[in-house]
Amino acid sequence: MLCVALNMTKKLYSFIALSYLLVALTSCTSKEKTSTYFGGKIINPKTKFVVLYAKDKVVDTLLLNDRNKFLGTYDNLDEGLYYFEHGNENQYIYLEPKDSLMLRLNTWNFDESIVFAGKGAERNNILIDIFLENENDRKEFYQLNRLEPAEYINKMDSIIGSRLITYNDYTERHPNETSKYLEILKTSLTYSIYSRVERYPINHVYISRKDNFPEINASFYKYRTELDYNNNSLMYYTPYARYITNYLYNVTYSMGHEPMKDGFSSDFTVDLLNTIDAKINSKDSKNAFLKRTVLDHFYRKSSCNINQKAFDVFFSLSSNKEDKTLVKDILADNKVIHKGDEIKGFTISDFTNQAIDIEDFTINKNSVLLFWSEEYMSKSFISSRIPFLQKKYPLLNFAVIEIDGDNTNRIKNVDIKNQYFINSKALKDNFLRSKMNRTILVNKNGIVENGYAAISSGNIYKQLKELSKIN
Image (cartoon, rainbow, N blue to C red; front, side, top):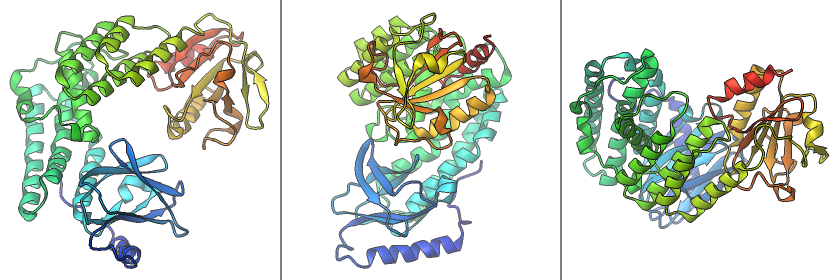
């Protein structure tokens, strides 16, 4: 965890091949001197396109040609942080007008394989190197949470110091670099460390198996006075957003809450929502944090139990009508199908378009029914999560049911015999209005054991273990 520097070990043939690609892709246009280019080559592509985003807005969808190459040309591109998505993975890039940024990546090793060439490459290569160093050092950083506060913060201060040396070295070597990029570079280098400092109290409890937070004096967080907590342009940048999230949780814990490992109490959620309201000035960012908090805490419980006070606070603080409608739909969904109810009265369809009564599917089988929509749950998450749970709980009968889907949207790595779809509009009592993922646990007698479980929750393991034991 020494200072971050450019990764000079990237294979020379990759750079040469990419440089050749850059020349080949841009040599046939007359707009070379005024346009901005973003392109490259995808090895082992997962789809036939690459999508370029600015914040959460699609800038362009770039089709791969028969050699898996792509190129976008932009005449009025603003300087700033973007990200591209291919398959189910994505990565940030920084673009300036007149850049000609080319990338090469292998989806089998997505982040680690990325190499940039062309104008703008050095800026982006160092950002990738910082990202990879943070990821590679994750376990080592976590182990540092065993240290007592004074020793821990001294270690973090030393790491910050070395990263600032990297930052200062870059600025000296690039005197004409823009202030916008330098802000991104400094954020990438330092906020990931500050984020870990904010997580230290709760991580120290976890790793040390203690019941109470360590005693920490005010100087532990002296860096806070130098940070900007309402930089709207950075709210979509993971190092910054993760820091803000950890800061908000840490501030809320400091109000007198005890460490919570299995879920968050009603009082904690309410205090966190009010902390977000007090600390975040941007309306859009505030609304995003409010929605994420109230939904994350609900799903973490993996239960139909509603923290009504927290939802009431959310409705009073959020100004986003769409978010409020979504949450209202979830609350409405939650009123239908509870523990003790009989699961009946609707059908699911398999990939041969054969309709199956839910009573027939669950009879004599303890079942896990995951209802999902691609808008709110990715295929990649399901394809990793469901096979894992099936292996861990082989006695359970799993169904992965797409809400308002069809037989063309198959999930790789999940047995097709476990994949179904359902027409929510045909339901007499619609329990899927929100189209948010919902897992229903049903015993072999067709009786619901849990009407609103969540496969993303840590509590699901105990719930599935208990379901497996039902005779």
